[in-house]
Length: 546
Image 1: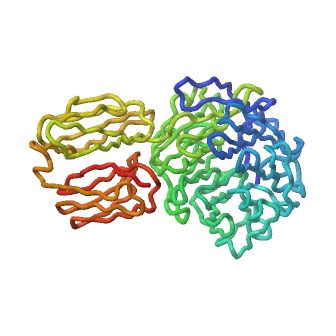
Image 2 (image 1 turned 180 degrees about the vertical axis):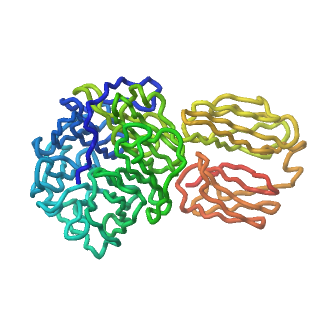
Image 3 (image 1 turned 90 degrees about the vertical axis):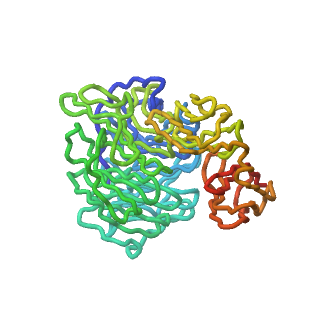
C-alpha cells in the first residue's frame, strides 16, 4: 500500500551555521517542494533517494536523485513518464546499479508495476517481470544486498503476503511459499511503501498497517511474523517506521506525522532479541518526532528522529533529535521548532555514526532538498593507555589517547607527574620524580556530552627501580612474531593482553605460571601493545606481527 506522506508547502529553510550537525544540500529537482521519501546509502560518496510531490496537489511522480561525491552534486532523474506511476522505495548497490519498486498511483495496479533496475546510473530503467505485477498485486518495497541476492514484497495476495526473492539480480523471481512464512496475515492487512529495513548481512524486515512486523534472517527466503504491540490509530497507522542498529536491537514506531507535542497516536516499541519480543518504550524525555525513525548501524542504541509537520495555527513540530539509550532524546541544536519555524526533516538514513542524510523539501533546482549529517554521532568515551605502568624513579611515561566519539576538548590530570595537567589530545612524556602509586585522569568533551576516565594508582614508581624491587624479568620471543609468541617471566604471570593501537583488546588470556604461548596467526600484520600482568601490575611492551 502507498503510505500517505506530508502534503504541505515546504517551509523556507536557511542553511544552518557552520558548526551545525546538519548541512543543507541541493537535490537538483527543477520543480519546487520535492520531498525525499526514501534514501539508499551505498557508502560515504554514493547515495540514491526517491522524491514525492510535497505541494499538496497530489501529483504522482517517479523521480529520484543521486550523488556520487558525497552530496556536493545531486543529479535528478525519473523512471517512467510522470502522472501515473509512483515509487515505493529504492535500493542501490553502487553508483550505477539500483532497483525501485513501482506502483500505479492514478488507478488500478497493472502489468507495468513491479520492480525496475538500472545499470547506468538511472539513465535507463528495465522492467524485471515476474514480480508484483497485475491488478491483484501492489509493489511496496525492494531490497538488494549485492548484484545477485535481493527481495521484494507487496501486500496480501491469495491469503498471505506476496514476497519474492532472487539470486540472479532480478532476472528471475521466486515467490516465498506460505509454508516458509511462520505467521499469518489478518483481515485488511497490508504493507507500506518505504517501511522496510535491512541491517547486517542477511536481515530484512517490513511493517504492516496492523502493527505486525515480518522478519527474515536469510535474505528473504524464510520469514517469521510478530505483533509489536502497536495499535493502529487510523487508516495510515500501524508500523510507520522500522529502525535496527544491529540484527538484535531495533525499534518500530507509529508516527502519523504529529502536528504538535500532544499527539497521542505516536507509539514506540523496542526489541533486544531480533524482533521476537517487543517492549513498549515509556518514560521518554526530550523531543521525539513522528516523521522518521532511523537506527545508526554499528552502535548499541543510537537512533535519530525527524519531524516536518506544521499543524493548525502554524504550530510547528519540526526538527531532528537523537538518542544514545533509546529513551532520552535531544534535539539537534538549531533544528527544533515549536511555535516558531524550525527545520523540516523527512525520511532519514544512516550508514554509520558519521555518514547519514535526511530528507527535506527543495525550493528550486539549486536550493535545498536534503540534509547531510556532519560529525560523529556518538557519546564521547574517555580511554587511554600508558607506555608503561611500572617505572623507575625519575623515568617518564608516554600516554596514548584512545578516546572515541570525536571529542573537541581533552583535559589530562597526572597526580605526582610533571607536568601535572595537560589540555590536548596526546600529552608530552610525563616524568615521575617521587616514588609511589599515582592516579591518572582524562576528561573528554564533544557536541554530545562529556566523559571522564580515572585510573586509580595506575602508575607505580619504584624508589630504586621496579626490577630490583620485584625481581621481574620478562622475555618475549619471537618478536616480530608470525604464528605464535611466547612470554616468559621470572615470576608468576597472571594475565596477558594484546591490544591494537586504537585500544581494542584483541587477545586476553589468563595464566598461572612462568610461561604462556599466544597464538598470533589470526592477527593482521602490524604493531600491537602487549600487556603482561604480574603481581597485579601491568608491564607494557610493543610487539610486531608479521
